[in-house]
Image (cartoon, rainbow, N blue to C red):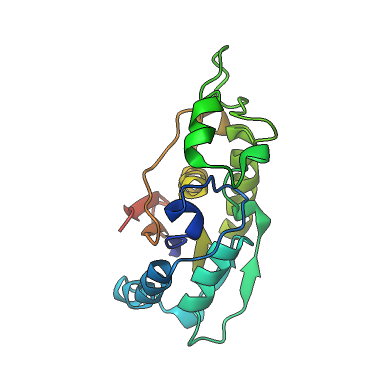
Length: 201
């Protein structure tokens, strides 16, 4: 049975400072570090044996810090993968969130939800979906369980790719995943169903 423990990074400085995140390389807050430390017991409580898992993580600092805290008592290697980054907001990264909200174009005027970029230099949903789906397809062919540390919006695409949702159907995709959350993705041995057995815990 293939099991993935999907974690979103804990609270980061850009959020509490009211700045746009994306690829802006913020760090964990003190509250975020405490939350990350609490994930260790929760992972074990859900039946995962950390030392038997392969660990993958976004290469942005807030995700790496979350992973390093979770792995503090483990000798597991940390596999950094930029495909797990949050959606890029281009020239708006690090900008005041309120200013960003005023000037973005949130939806496509021609109805192209997958190809639309909300601001200059931003990724589209399709861009994120393609890179995340590539990551998920790769790890699904590997043996053993996986611990995946990523970001709130990117995690939605991890779940969708895990359930083999076609990229062209991801235009309205969004799960509300909070910082420091755990979701559990399971493939059963009999029917090979892909189940989201826990979401945003």
